[in-house]
Structure formats: C-alpha cells, structure tokens
Image (cartoon, rainbow, N blue to C red):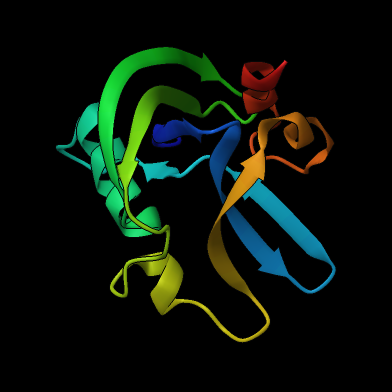
Length: 130
C-alpha cells in the first residue's frame, strides 16, 4: 500500500502557492506537501513539508479533505494562512538536493483562476479552485 500524502492549500491575495516540477517540455504543479513518514501524522507531515518546500511562515486553519486517487494513495489536504516570507526551497530539502539545471522544483504563486488550465498532480485538487 502506498503511503499517505499531506498537502497545504495556501492562498494569498487571489494566488495559490504551488510547487512546480520543471522538466524539459513539462511543468507539473502540486500543492506543497509530501509523504507522511513512519511515525508521523498527516498534520506533522504537512508542517514539515511546508518548511522544506516553501520556507514561509504559515498558520493552520483547518483540514479540508481526505481523498483516495485511482493509484490508491490517500491525500490529506489542509488549509493554511500565509503569514510571511518569500517562497523558496529549504537548502536541505530533497527537492533542492536532487535538482539539476534541467529538472528542478520551484515554489510559485499562481492566480487561482489559472489553476484549471495547469497540469496538476493529483488532478483531483482542482476541485478547490472551481
């Protein structure tokens, strides 16, 4: 069975904070988040992932949802309030350490109206932007 994933929905001034995986000819967007590690709750995982993938200060608002994708992975989605900071990968994060000049991750603010046109992973998170 695949490990659960915990992710954060962070919106500021009509823009959502997304993590973009950039590869030659393909950009895929996702909510900041990642795998719930052994001994970790989804709430603990999302806090860790926000710091690793965005380095911003944020505040928990509420749990929005949990859903299972066709790949049988459970995704836990939490709403957070942006507090301060400029989004950037933490230097020790797996996303930063594994980057190359051609393939890398980048936290970006995206207008919520544009999300419907992006390639999102998982696709199911688009329901938060209708």
